[in-house]
Amino acid sequence: MCFGMKKGEAVAVFKTLPGQKIARLELGGVLNTPQEKIFIAAGSEIRGFTKRGKQFLSFETNLTESIKAMHISGSDLFLSASYIYNHYCDCKDQHYYLSGDKINDVICLPVERLPRITPVLACQDRVLRVLQGSDVIYETEVPGPPTVLALHNGNGGDSGEDLLYGTSDGKLGLIQITTSKPIHKWEIRNEKKRGGILCVDSFDIVGDGVKDLLVGRDDGLVEVYSFDNANEPVLRFDQMLSESITSIQGGCIGKDGYDEIVVSTYSGWVTGLTTEPIHKESGPGEELKINQEMQNKISSLRVELEQLQYKVLQEREKYQQSSQSSKAKSAVPSVSINDKFTLNKDDASYSLILEVQTAIDNVLIQSDVPIDLLDVDKNSAVVSFSSCDSESNDNFLLATYRCQANTTRLELKIRSIEGQYGTLQAYVTPRIQPKTCQALQYLIKPLSLHQRTHFIDHDRPMNTLTLTGQFSFAEVHSWVVFCLPEVPEKPPAGECVTFYFQNTFLDTQLESTYRDFKGLTRETWEERKRHPAPQVLPILICGSSYSGD
Image (cartoon, rainbow, N blue to C red; front, side, top):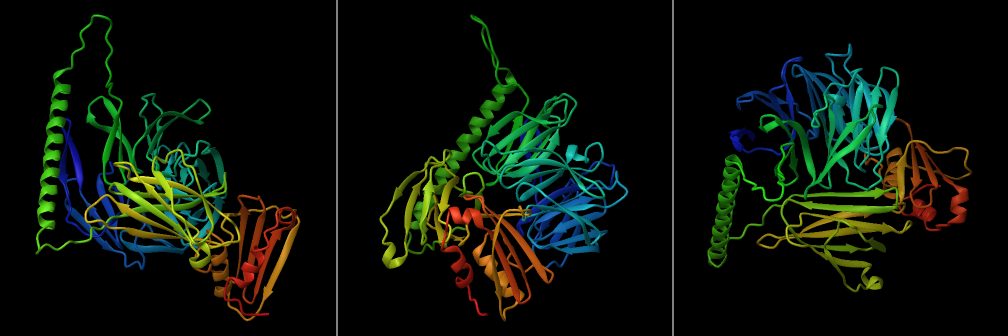
C-alpha cells in the first residue's frame, strides 16, 4: 500500500491485491535519476510498480528459499535467501554464492561512483563478506551479528566505499570497503544496553548541511546521530516508541519547510516525528491562541477517534451475538510473533524478546533444565512462580508473566548453567477472542555460555581432546551443533573446518577443528582448572550418538 499526504492527512495512492508476505521493499530506477520505481520481494518473486501503482515487472527467480534481503542498483538486482546469494542483470542470472552461515542483508557499493561491482553480505557469524562475481575477495569481522547494511550518506561517503552496519546486539559502525582490505573508521558501543539495530538511514534532519544518521532499534528506540568536526557520531536526539522499528526514512512529508522522520513499526503503525514546533510559550498576562490549522487538526483527530471507538463497539457486539448462536463457528485467529533468543556477552545471560502484533495477556515460561530468571528494568509485567516437581517430570521452572494493558513487547533475561542442557518453552497468550496460545521452543545447549568468535589467543595453555573413528564429516558437525550455539546447521563446504568460541562467563576459549575421520577440540586449561566444570567434556563425547574408537 502506498500513502500520500494531502492537507495534513494520509491518503492512499494505491494498494495491491493480497498475496504472499512481502519480505523486502526497495526503491530503484535508472542510475543518476530519481529512484521512483517500487520493487517488492515476496516468496521467490520480484515485482515492480510505478509510483502510480501500475505493475511493470513480475520476475520469478525460482530460488529454492524465500527471499530475505534485496538491493537494487540500476538494472542490477542483488538478492539473498537464508544461505543463497544471487546477482541478476536485466533479470538474467550473473553470479551465485552459497554462504556458510545465514545471510541477514545484502548491499552493493555504488556502481555509478566505482569502476567495479562490489556486493557485500552481512552474515550471522559476525562477518561481512565482500564479493567479486561469485567469489569472496575477503572477510571482515564485526563486533556482533550484522542485521542491516547501508551506504554512508546514502552514496558511500566521499570515497564511495563507506558502509554502515548495525548489529543485533545494538552496535553501530562505519567501515571502508577497499579493493584489498577493510578499514574500520568508527564504532558505537551499546553501553546503555539498548535494543538491536533493524534499520538505518542518512538525512539532514538537523539542517546544518551535513547528513545525520537515523537509527531504528528493536526495542522501539529512534535515534538521531550528528557528526562532529572529527566526523565522529554524536547522539543528538532519541525517542522511545512502544514497538520495534522495522523501517526508518527522513524527508519532507507532512508540511513544507519542516522535515520529518517517518518510521514503521512491527504491528504496522506508521509514525512521523517532525521538526515543526509543537509547543508555544507566552509571558504573564499574554493570551495563547491556537491557529485555525491546528484547531482543524485537533477536531479531525477527535472525530476519527470517535468513529474508531464506535466501530470497535459495533464489532464487539457483533461478536458477542455470533458467539452465543448455536450455528456459529469459531475460527482460531492467526497471530504473528516476533521472537529473539540471544546471548549477552556483557553479563553472560540470555535475552528472550517476544513481540506480538496485538496486546499480550500473559506468557508462561517452562523449562526442563535449571535456569534463573533475572530482573529487567523495561519489564513491567507481574511475575508469579509455581512449584515444580523436578525429580519426577524434569520440570525445573514454571513462571507466569501477566502483562499490563496494551503491552505488545516483553523482554526476559535468563541465565543457564553450563553443562546442563534442555528446552525452554514460552506459551504466549494474546489478548484476543477466542482465547488462543502459541508455544515457542528454545534450545539450551550444553555449552550455552560460549559465544562465537573468529580469533583466539593461541599462546594461552590449551587442553586437547582428539576423537577418531568411523564417522562422517556431517556427523561430527552435528555433534558441534548439538553442543555449541551460533553454529550453522548445514555442514560447511570443504574437507576441514575450524570454529572458535569464547566463554562469556569464565572468559575461557574453545577451538573446534574437524575433518573427515578426525575431530580435534582444544580448550584453555588454566581457566578450566580454576573453575572446573566436569560435565562438559563427557557431554561433548557421550551426549551425541558417538560411535568410534
